[in-house]
Image 1 (tube, one colour):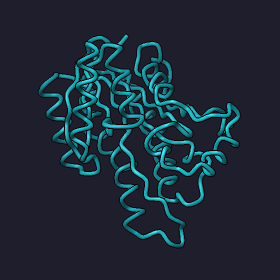
Image 2 (tube, helix red, strand yellow; image 1 turned 30 degrees about the horizontal axis):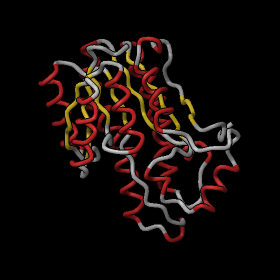
Image 3 (tube, one colour; image 1 turned 60 degrees about the vertical axis):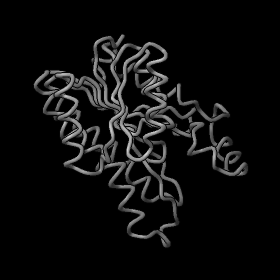
Length: 246
């Protein structure tokens, strides 16, 4: 489905990003596995992809750094002559109540989750415009739709990703570049595994399907949006949350 395509997945060393990278590779894409500090985990993802017959390579870059992101995109274009798919997945949390939240806790989350997505789109769009086509998929969150106490920074960043998605979809649509957002709910990853049992039970009680999602379920939607089957879908926010944000 994606044979011959070149994909960049940010924050791909673990969690949802890891599942997306593996799934894209299974569909035939070459996957640039971006990481910031987890080189060992990124190499493990690359090794798994290669073991399964796919093609991938790890690339270090802090996507909140404008110039470093430009260099990453330039390196990819130099190596592969094109970039067909961008998955803006890199994200962090620094949870705290608003009255206790430090300025740096707010800034760090915005810089990675929102500015990082902007940096990647800003630098990759030039290449996609030359190609007259491309798929950009931004990973938002149910928190960016519903809000969540103790996550003013995270919710703001993920709501911002939705606004960024809609604006860039309008700007780039005439050149056959689609831009969509995926909003996962509670997904069984390292990020949610650290939650207490009481918090997990409370979360599940708000989910009509009565369970946490799996990373593969998010990755499957991303693969569809990255394919030719989704050529007429742009500017959309699609939730993968078991019905939580109806």
